[in-house]
Length: 512
Image (spheres, rainbow, N blue to C red):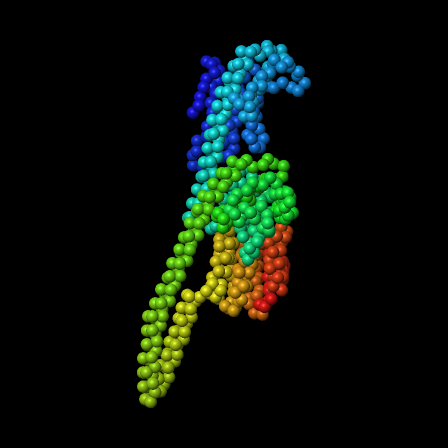
């Protein structure tokens, strides 16, 4: 660590390191404190050595506001002191910063020897501050790396993806000094729309969840499709010559500076929108670099998780194929052989014991029914995703994954067969169930919810809960999208107060 001593009775000046890292990582604020402490130590040493009443050490960051630290009592605006009572010294090279020293009016003026000493002190101050800034940057890189490792570990350990993305948003909001971070994911069934699936940050962040943002030809579209992070000066102001749709939906009015950080490379699985409120400083380009490295860590983990999921699906399908073969080649054949043998015995007993023969015939019919049911199971094991069993499984998995860990007890009721559901309606059905359940979990403060899917002349999804109702922002964003889905198919969406809670019904005709 760089260290020097001005003279025997002067304070020691050193670059102050960040605090030690125990179980939890050092905070962003403590890194700022380390640089400020170094500036303060340098300014105090210079003031003591040159007999100044005040010292102001200013470091220019190149982006964002300058960092200034004042030691002592600077002269008031109405104190008119001669120039000889002030020294303004550049920190080694112009543009990096300045060290200003002031003496009171009644004090002796600075001498040429003081000026020479001050220049030497400014050069040394530059080294000390640069060391502190290097330590600060290293500390920030460590913080971002630790956050990326934590997110990757959570993904690989099987933590639900929505929970991990919410944690990622919270960590990025803290590390980037952002007012809100939204995790934008593709909206179900809408290729050109992103939905804010999770948000973290200040009190305004909660209102972002569920908001839909059309991609169109926006900077958000460019970042999400290309996988290249972008710095935005003001998300509410489109670049010159661009479409006004560049303003990002309902959130543009309150936020200005932004970073768009895609997760997943060119085939982005999600995009982080890192936001500051209007009037706050722009993001430092170094923050973009660190956030992009964080995203790369998360992307590798997401790709690995996806690879593991594909491997599990292939293994599951292989197991299903094996079970189907075993059922067909062994179980069905043995039952069939047993039924044939019983049938021959029954026929041989018809002349002498017709009642016994009749009972044997009944058992043979039962065996035939068992064979039919086994063959249905074999068919389901090979069935495509649009089959009745697969749709039920998808609905069950959606309800389970959305409610898991939120203290909500769900119930799913499918009151008719769904094998005849038009294939193009299945994604809408799954997306509607997902969004309705998500809205209840996030906004209704419910302890129980029931999802009922009924199919007759139309498809009807009814979600009831025992919560406190849905806030206006939910109706404006998420439910408005569901209403649009229904209207495109000639259906409707209705929201009504239930005896205890809310009932939402989404209905579309089978042929729209």
